[in-house]
Length: 219
Image (cartoon, rainbow, N blue to C red):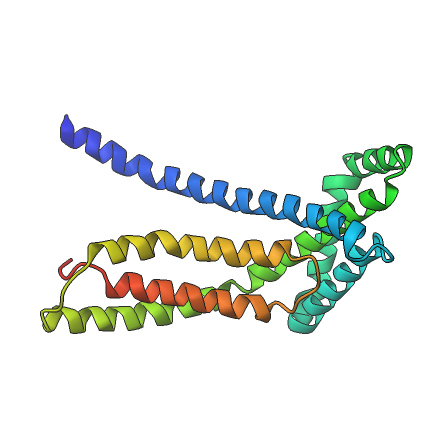
Protein backbone atom coordinates (compact mmCIF):
# COMPACT_ATOMS: atom_id res chain seq x y z
CA UNK A 1 0.00 0.00 0.00
CA UNK A 2 2.76 2.40 0.92
CA UNK A 3 4.58 1.69 -2.34
CA UNK A 4 1.38 2.23 -4.32
CA UNK A 5 0.74 5.53 -2.56
CA UNK A 6 4.31 6.62 -3.23
CA UNK A 7 4.03 5.77 -6.92
CA UNK A 8 0.76 7.68 -7.19
CA UNK A 9 2.37 10.69 -5.49
CA UNK A 10 5.28 10.53 -7.92
CA UNK A 11 2.89 10.51 -10.86
CA UNK A 12 0.87 13.45 -9.56
CA UNK A 13 3.84 15.60 -8.50
CA UNK A 14 4.95 16.80 -11.98
CA UNK A 15 1.52 18.21 -13.00
CA UNK A 16 1.26 20.00 -9.65
CA UNK A 17 4.72 21.45 -10.19
CA UNK A 18 3.78 22.62 -13.68
CA UNK A 19 0.62 24.24 -12.35
CA UNK A 20 2.71 26.03 -9.76
CA UNK A 21 5.01 27.37 -12.47
CA UNK A 22 2.07 28.55 -14.55
CA UNK A 23 0.60 30.31 -11.52
CA UNK A 24 3.97 31.92 -10.88
CA UNK A 25 4.17 33.24 -14.45
CA UNK A 26 0.61 34.57 -14.31
CA UNK A 27 1.29 36.16 -10.94
CA UNK A 28 4.38 37.89 -12.35
CA UNK A 29 2.45 39.17 -15.38
CA UNK A 30 -0.45 40.45 -13.28
CA UNK A 31 1.80 42.13 -10.73
CA UNK A 32 3.87 43.69 -13.52
CA UNK A 33 0.75 45.02 -15.24
CA UNK A 34 -0.71 46.55 -12.08
CA UNK A 35 2.63 48.06 -11.10
CA UNK A 36 3.39 49.48 -14.56
CA UNK A 37 -0.06 51.09 -14.86
CA UNK A 38 0.18 52.53 -11.34
CA UNK A 39 3.67 53.93 -11.99
CA UNK A 40 2.52 55.39 -15.32
CA UNK A 41 -0.38 57.15 -13.62
CA UNK A 42 1.84 58.46 -10.84
CA UNK A 43 4.28 59.71 -13.46
CA UNK A 44 1.50 61.55 -15.26
CA UNK A 45 0.85 63.46 -12.04
CA UNK A 46 4.39 64.07 -10.78
CA UNK A 47 7.09 63.28 -13.36
CA UNK A 48 5.79 63.89 -16.88
CA UNK A 49 2.50 65.82 -16.54
CA UNK A 50 3.13 67.75 -19.75
CA UNK A 51 3.26 64.52 -21.80
CA UNK A 52 0.18 62.82 -20.39
CA UNK A 53 -0.78 59.59 -22.14
CA UNK A 54 1.70 60.37 -24.93
CA UNK A 55 4.49 59.16 -22.63
CA UNK A 56 3.14 55.59 -22.69
CA UNK A 57 2.60 55.84 -26.46
CA UNK A 58 6.24 56.90 -26.93
CA UNK A 59 7.44 54.01 -24.77
CA UNK A 60 5.41 51.60 -26.92
CA UNK A 61 6.92 53.03 -30.12
CA UNK A 62 10.46 52.65 -28.76
CA UNK A 63 9.87 49.10 -27.50
CA UNK A 64 8.44 48.16 -30.90
CA UNK A 65 11.56 49.69 -32.43
CA UNK A 66 13.74 47.47 -30.23
CA UNK A 67 11.75 44.48 -31.44
CA UNK A 68 12.29 45.48 -35.07
CA UNK A 69 16.01 46.06 -34.55
CA UNK A 70 16.83 42.89 -32.59
CA UNK A 71 14.46 40.43 -34.26
CA UNK A 72 14.08 41.95 -37.72
CA UNK A 73 13.03 38.77 -39.64
CA UNK A 74 10.10 38.04 -37.36
CA UNK A 75 9.30 41.58 -36.18
CA UNK A 76 6.37 42.10 -38.55
CA UNK A 77 4.67 38.86 -37.57
CA UNK A 78 5.31 39.46 -33.88
CA UNK A 79 3.90 42.99 -33.94
CA UNK A 80 0.86 41.74 -35.87
CA UNK A 81 0.33 38.96 -33.32
CA UNK A 82 0.73 41.49 -30.50
CA UNK A 83 -1.88 43.74 -32.11
CA UNK A 84 -4.29 40.82 -32.49
CA UNK A 85 -3.80 39.80 -28.85
CA UNK A 86 -4.57 43.33 -27.72
CA UNK A 87 -7.57 43.56 -30.07
CA UNK A 88 -9.21 40.35 -28.85
CA UNK A 89 -8.45 41.03 -25.18
CA UNK A 90 -9.65 44.64 -25.09
CA UNK A 91 -11.33 45.85 -28.29
CA UNK A 92 -13.31 42.73 -29.28
CA UNK A 93 -14.52 42.16 -25.71
CA UNK A 94 -15.58 45.80 -25.38
CA UNK A 95 -13.30 46.37 -22.39
CA UNK A 96 -11.44 49.23 -24.05
CA UNK A 97 -14.65 50.99 -25.10
CA UNK A 98 -16.03 50.62 -21.59
CA UNK A 99 -12.88 52.07 -20.08
CA UNK A 100 -12.96 54.98 -22.53
CA UNK A 101 -16.59 55.75 -21.66
CA UNK A 102 -15.77 55.53 -17.97
CA UNK A 103 -12.75 57.77 -18.43
CA UNK A 104 -14.69 60.30 -20.48
CA UNK A 105 -17.49 60.42 -17.95
CA UNK A 106 -15.06 60.96 -15.10
CA UNK A 107 -12.73 63.27 -17.07
CA UNK A 108 -9.99 60.65 -16.76
CA UNK A 109 -9.65 59.91 -20.46
CA UNK A 110 -5.88 60.51 -20.46
CA UNK A 111 -5.38 57.95 -17.70
CA UNK A 112 -7.47 55.36 -19.53
CA UNK A 113 -5.45 55.91 -22.72
CA UNK A 114 -2.21 55.60 -20.76
CA UNK A 115 -3.38 52.32 -19.21
CA UNK A 116 -4.27 50.87 -22.62
CA UNK A 117 -0.92 51.93 -24.08
CA UNK A 118 0.83 50.39 -21.07
CA UNK A 119 -0.94 47.08 -21.65
CA UNK A 120 0.43 47.02 -25.20
CA UNK A 121 3.92 47.86 -23.90
CA UNK A 122 3.66 44.89 -21.54
CA UNK A 123 2.66 42.56 -24.39
CA UNK A 124 5.62 43.66 -26.53
CA UNK A 125 8.01 43.22 -23.61
CA UNK A 126 6.67 39.74 -22.88
CA UNK A 127 7.45 38.82 -26.50
CA UNK A 128 10.95 40.28 -26.15
CA UNK A 129 11.50 38.29 -22.96
CA UNK A 130 10.34 35.11 -24.68
CA UNK A 131 12.89 35.67 -27.44
CA UNK A 132 15.55 36.30 -24.78
CA UNK A 133 14.98 32.91 -23.12
CA UNK A 134 18.03 31.35 -24.89
CA UNK A 135 20.25 33.87 -23.08
CA UNK A 136 19.02 32.61 -19.70
CA UNK A 137 19.40 29.01 -20.86
CA UNK A 138 22.95 29.67 -22.10
CA UNK A 139 24.08 31.28 -18.85
CA UNK A 140 22.41 28.44 -16.91
CA UNK A 141 24.29 25.79 -18.93
CA UNK A 142 27.60 27.59 -18.37
CA UNK A 143 26.82 27.93 -14.66
CA UNK A 144 25.88 24.27 -14.33
CA UNK A 145 29.05 23.17 -16.13
CA UNK A 146 31.23 25.32 -13.89
CA UNK A 147 29.33 24.25 -10.79
CA UNK A 148 29.66 20.54 -11.57
CA UNK A 149 33.39 21.05 -12.08
CA UNK A 150 33.66 22.70 -8.66
CA UNK A 151 31.56 19.89 -7.19
CA UNK A 152 33.93 17.25 -8.55
CA UNK A 153 36.91 19.17 -7.17
CA UNK A 154 35.24 19.30 -3.75
CA UNK A 155 34.27 15.65 -3.94
CA UNK A 156 37.79 14.40 -4.69
CA UNK A 157 39.53 16.81 -2.33
CA UNK A 158 37.35 15.93 0.69
CA UNK A 159 35.96 19.45 0.85
CA UNK A 160 33.28 20.45 3.33
CA UNK A 161 29.65 20.35 2.30
CA UNK A 162 27.01 22.90 3.32
CA UNK A 163 23.46 21.80 2.60
CA UNK A 164 22.07 25.19 3.53
CA UNK A 165 23.93 26.86 0.67
CA UNK A 166 22.45 24.42 -1.84
CA UNK A 167 18.88 24.87 -0.63
CA UNK A 168 19.22 28.66 -0.43
CA UNK A 169 20.59 28.84 -3.98
CA UNK A 170 17.90 26.47 -5.25
CA UNK A 171 15.17 28.65 -3.76
CA UNK A 172 16.85 31.82 -5.03
CA UNK A 173 17.15 30.82 -8.71
CA UNK A 174 13.41 31.27 -9.51
CA UNK A 175 13.44 34.56 -7.59
CA UNK A 176 16.21 35.83 -9.87
CA UNK A 177 14.04 35.06 -12.91
CA UNK A 178 11.04 36.74 -11.28
CA UNK A 179 13.04 39.85 -10.38
CA UNK A 180 14.50 40.19 -13.89
CA UNK A 181 11.13 39.72 -15.59
CA UNK A 182 9.25 41.98 -13.18
CA UNK A 183 11.87 44.71 -13.35
CA UNK A 184 11.81 44.77 -17.15
CA UNK A 185 8.02 44.53 -17.52
CA UNK A 186 7.20 47.18 -14.93
CA UNK A 187 9.84 49.81 -15.75
CA UNK A 188 8.05 53.02 -16.85
CA UNK A 189 10.40 54.04 -19.66
CA UNK A 190 11.87 52.41 -22.74
CA UNK A 191 14.99 50.35 -22.16
CA UNK A 192 16.96 48.16 -24.52
CA UNK A 193 16.32 44.50 -23.57
CA UNK A 194 20.01 43.49 -23.17
CA UNK A 195 20.38 46.11 -20.42
CA UNK A 196 18.05 43.99 -18.28
CA UNK A 197 18.34 40.52 -19.82
CA UNK A 198 22.13 40.19 -19.65
CA UNK A 199 22.48 41.06 -15.92
CA UNK A 200 19.45 38.91 -15.08
CA UNK A 201 20.75 35.97 -17.10
CA UNK A 202 24.20 36.35 -15.53
CA UNK A 203 22.72 36.26 -12.02
CA UNK A 204 20.68 33.22 -13.00
CA UNK A 205 23.86 31.56 -14.26
CA UNK A 206 25.58 32.32 -10.94
CA UNK A 207 22.63 30.76 -9.11
CA UNK A 208 22.92 27.65 -11.30
CA UNK A 209 26.65 27.51 -10.58
CA UNK A 210 26.10 27.67 -6.81
CA UNK A 211 23.34 25.04 -6.97
CA UNK A 212 25.52 22.62 -8.93
CA UNK A 213 28.67 23.34 -6.91
CA UNK A 214 26.96 22.84 -3.55
CA UNK A 215 25.07 19.70 -4.57
CA UNK A 216 25.68 16.68 -2.34
CA UNK A 217 28.89 14.74 -2.90
CA UNK A 218 27.32 11.46 -3.95
CA UNK A 219 24.26 11.04 -6.16
